[in-house]
Image: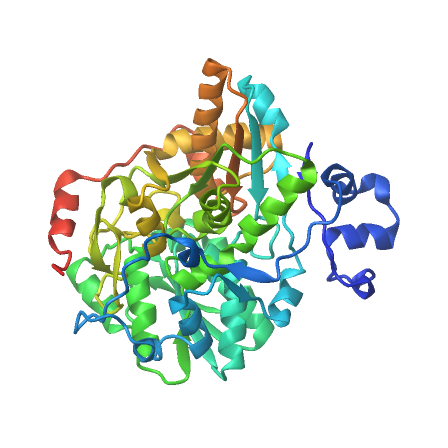
Length: 488
């Protein structure tokens, strides 16, 4: 197994229970049992936690269109975002700076699980009989089990530093809600979460995880907010959507001076924080002596996981240092990039957020309740949408049964049970590897494995029993939602 999984933290942390896996091995002396120690030998040296986040906007030949005020349709002024976010996050959202320093207090928390491992999937390669090399960057080692704490921690820290008392948010599958609940508990913040009802009912242990970290969790749509009550009045059986949950959380934040809103994907500052993934990965590939990837693959719902891995590699491609292809993978039931329109639209169902130029299925679109709850979002990150429009990446939509089949192949060879969301990336990576089998190409395939599926075993059971069905986007439903996109 080729693995890069080492850390360069202060030596005085070596005996702490909060140190990195490599340091725990050094303290215990049981080197022969250490996954991290073997990885250290393979990687050829230490891989450090990044000290800066990377902002792709600085290197783009054409800058992305600005967000607009929902009433005036004029470009947003920083003060327009003040009811929702603290000043530093607003600055990061709108900045053109290439790099943003990571506060030491955030790095101290990152050290609980970062750097995360980059692993070569040799057993999967063998199963497929492919000449390709498949690497995956595994973010499931975080306390919440996904990539989401990479932005939850800085968002919680900046809010706490600004004197904020309460934060509110939405969550789909529960990974983001879990991450913010965890981060809020570290910095003394009260946390309230609106979870999409379909996932609230499918994944009760995610709710319990959030509550264990002290959060209050509501199924969305709920009776707590005006937005939720209006949705339930129109459809009492609504399964909810991320757009609906965002409306509820934004409504609460906008009407309470002591409360700010945190978002787990879509916005620029969220994708900025996630670039620790790609920055580490560049260093890890170099430490392993591996060639640059030929293709970089990640699942996309709002886009933070894909952008976090891909953006640092896009920088290198723009600079002429490598030339990978970039492939976003989305569910066939919510095909934002492949079937949506590129237009200004609201980020939420009720129309409370700024208007963003993005690929959208319409802010009223309610995806069918597929098992990849974190990918059920009507829009795409404006920055990813812009990059897609520039032709820097491509996208593909895959049905959920193919994704779960790929997830089983991965689990039974690599040992990690993937969340349904990264199962989409695995399915696309397997497609690419099998194509290499036909052509004989020895490509290097890099994919984002953004979290484990330990709370998704009911979905696996449904698939293995043959009860899972593929869901698509009805044409009439899509046509109706697109008709409601604002004409800007």
